[in-house]
Length: 369
Image (tube, rainbow, N blue to C red):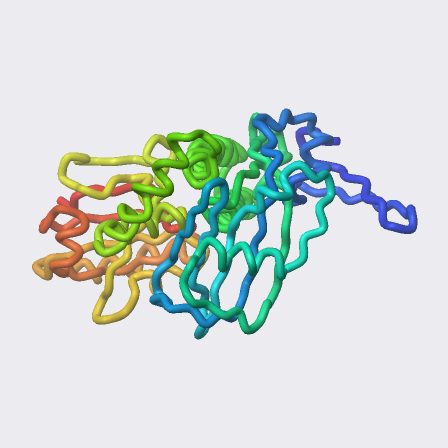
């Protein structure tokens, strides 16, 4: 139960013993069958696909670039082969349509390996299985992600097919989006109303994600004759051609990793002189190098980041002591030269400032007078 002051939860362990916990907020990160979601009486909208999927991390001898992912498509099945950190380390994601009608199928890894070899049709040898899991997949999302002082995140809030490979990244983004906001409210730096932006930002993303993963699944494993024709006769050549272009890879990576997500329509995003910038408030901070170092090396602290991009004609470094002294727990300050790559990314060679949220999304962007 909850009231204006906090939330009370009664927990029961396996021995039947109960414990009462009181807190300011409750976050349900308790998976697809979320008891928290059920207790909050949230509808879990969507559909259930009677199809079985698998995921496995393997060590594999495979004739492929270890920096590129591969997709192999059959008549009604597919496998995605995704490179992981470490030599010859791959993740396999696919479906097993032959088990779709079974209620509780017992699937052994050798069945998966045979399916992968059948689809890939190129030399490969799986030398070690690090872990393997099979599961039925649903496509659903909660009608909302919060009510009062209670919130949902990750699979408790939304589940979808693994075809897009985006589930983990999305859950992590849910958690961080909410965590920094709760942290600032608990520290007294923000009002409770800040937490309303969690539902606003993350629910919209969940809607888009379910639509795209459903579409991907239909193309990859749909039974319609025209999709089968497309998979067998058009898609292999098209995919091979697309992955040869750097621009295509630059598009695919932000989509799968979810860093291409933006909050431009969020109530927390503010633009000034919008037409002067290619990057907008609500976008994730773009990646670039500063003297050979990753810009994100400056952005690791869980606080706001004020970045001033300077043309070298003004001594903006003199501004640094004041905000860092008065707001050191909230904000850090950095002056960055307007390198050519930065000019190219942001679309301006004039000095400007950016205020980044703790999750490294741009809250405010403006020219410097």
